[in-house]
Image (cartoon, rainbow, N blue to C red; front, side):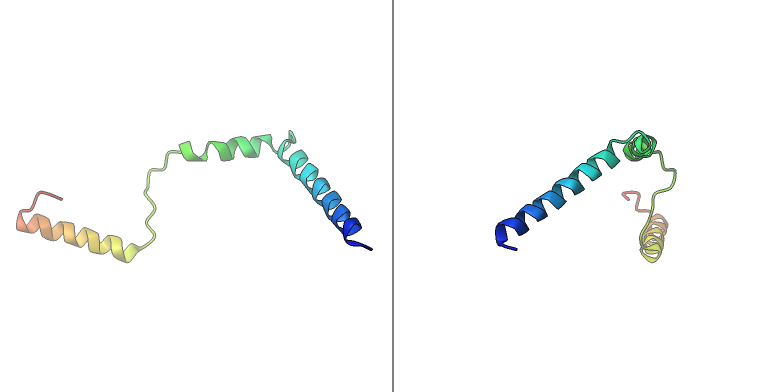
Length: 74
């Protein structure tokens, strides 16, 4: 098998994979899932996620100590 044949087979495999992914993405069965995913940025979350609970506690303690000192510029 020479280089040209190998490149041709790789190209054929990639074209088939591309067509398969395109058919999967545009199939009617997937439309509800993709519509739901498209609306995720607009979802209303009541709670802000925090990645570090310890840091948020320190921030709350700092705010309380500012209140005790009379500092209102938080």
